[in-house]
Each structure stands twice: as C-alpha cells, then as structure tokens.
Length: 284
Image (cartoon, rainbow, N blue to C red):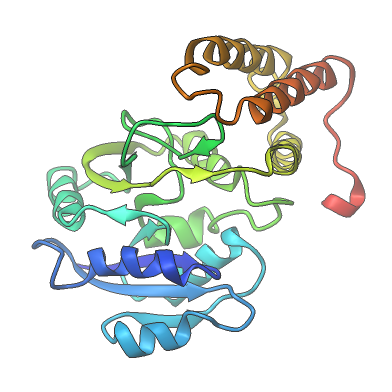
C-alpha cells in the first residue's frame, strides 16, 4: 500500500531539511511503501533546487500561494497514494513513525483516520513559546495525521481554504469528521517532535486566530455555546493561574506578552456576551 507524505513548506528551508532528513528511506524503519511530496508555497519556489539537488527521492510541486490550507490540499491532489500522511516542515518525525502507523493500520483495518502524537523537545521556558502539543489524543492537528485519501479528497473536500487566516482549519476538519461520526484513532508511538517556537507578535497573531474562530462559528453556529463567553473566561482563568505559577520558573520571560494575551481573551469573552459573531466582508 502506497502512502503519500505531504510536507507543506514556505520560506523555511532551514527547518525543512531537518524534517526531510528524518523521513529519508535510509532513516525510516520498515513500514509503508511511500512517496514524499514537498508542496512549496514560497513566491520564488525556494525549496525547488533544495529538493532536486539534495533529496532526489522526494517530489517537489509548486504550491498555490494561498496559505497553508490550500497548500496542504495541493499536495494531496498531487498524491498517488491511497493514504495521506500530513507532516509540517517544522516537525521532527520519529524514525519509526511509518512503522507505527503501519502497525496501527494493520490492527485496525476499518479505521480511516489515525491521529499522531505531537511532543516537544524540552520543557517550556517562556510564556511566548508555542507548540501544538498533543500527547494524549483528541486534537487532529494538521502537522501529524494519516487519513484515507478518498475520505480526505472526495468526502471532506480537504481543508477549508476560506478561513481568513492560518488557524482553525484543522479544527474544522476534525469537527466535520465528528459530524460524520467517523472514528479517529490516536497512535501515541507515531510521533513528531514540534520544537518550541517564539511567538513575539502576540497581539497580531491572537487577533488573526480570533477572526478565524469567527469564520468557524459562522460555518458551524451550533458550536457557539461551546466556544463562547464561558470558553474564553475559562481560558483567562487558566492563563492567570499559569501567570502566578510559572512566572518565577520562566524568570518572567514573555510576561508582558502573556498580559496582552489575557487581556485579549477577556475582550473576546465580552465580545461574545454582547455581540453576534460576524466577520467583516473584506475578511470573508
């Protein structure tokens, strides 16, 4: 059975090489027969020469230049495999990841979606470090999951490319699977390491994520009770607790940015209390 590994990238050759080195046929233990597709969203096709010169076993394809969701879909459309494995370019796949997914697939032949584990390389050291950690399952983050190609392309129609910013499109995909009552099986040993990333533009990034959330709620209004005022007040409560608990351990690194984060989430709670979630036309 052929698996197509989709690695979306955009102007991150320095991170991409680390990911590809771990996915090479020399490093991966026995598992699936696979092809690897690098779909490149950079304006100048930055990764093309890198792939052609250093990774001849991989296939470079030009991305649509329309953001991560469209770029992942582009790689999937180019795939020849009956299964799609999505891994982001800033992740470090375990050398046994294909073997673990293959074992899970063999043991669960009726399952069409397998959720991989996402861990970090060290303890967090600052409030502005981020990583999409998923060590117990329940989050189908886009940087590590395996899905039947027909399900992804034909039934789900891939990631929704209409999200205004690069956020929530994987939450949306997971929610659509749940609505179809399609089982997602967590495979703890099929893991990638997602190193901590410094997020210094807290205000800008948080506002973009919120606008993507508004799009998600317009699309799935039944989720408004779950992702409304109480949800954001709970996030504020947890963030304030963490501020008191971790400030000394982090030596107050990122303290100001965390205050901005807390203030914004309190604003979001008030927003949902008094306003309808609508998106300005220019952001749709």
